[in-house]
Image (cartoon, rainbow, N blue to C red):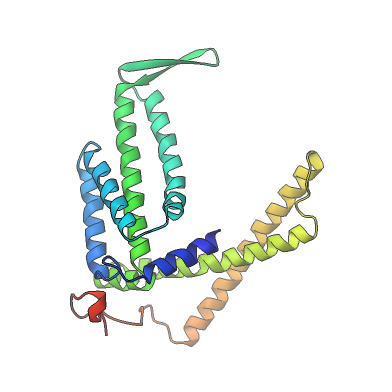
Length: 249
């Protein structure tokens, strides 16, 4: 599923539309500005307005709804969890009471306001990053960050992480398929089945960790052999132009 999502997003960034033609530096600056304003302004009006604007833009360029929901779902679940914690455990004026397991739990007004604000900010931030990821190829994003004087080590880690996340995913899937063929995940219930599955998962995680270490060593050796000096190559911005006007040379 991760690999298919990668190919889907990579294909979306190659589409020809208003936002993919926009200079990557402009999108990065606007995104950072929006995040700063989002954190600085109290309340949920700006956050909800930003979410609505981004969703309208995604609909305009025909981003699949399944992809949008899949990218937002996991952060949204964590946001809802934080919202519930603040609602029931933040001190303040009670607005309702629930009877759970023989005890009363009160939801407070202050917790509701704070939780709603955090949930709205999480949704807006994730939506903003989603918009940036489906309209900007990762290599253009890297060059834009370097042009804007972001630390090169952070950009380097981002690019390598993005590239090798899917390589390690393929490694893990191959190991899992081999385990499945050897009855590593048997069907049925019972303590033996559970132990066998846990053992297979532990082996899978250990093997992926070892493969990741080996891959890092071989990648470092290959980069050294090619005289890598920490600079991201492949293009440099010289002027503020749109993608259709050759943004770099």
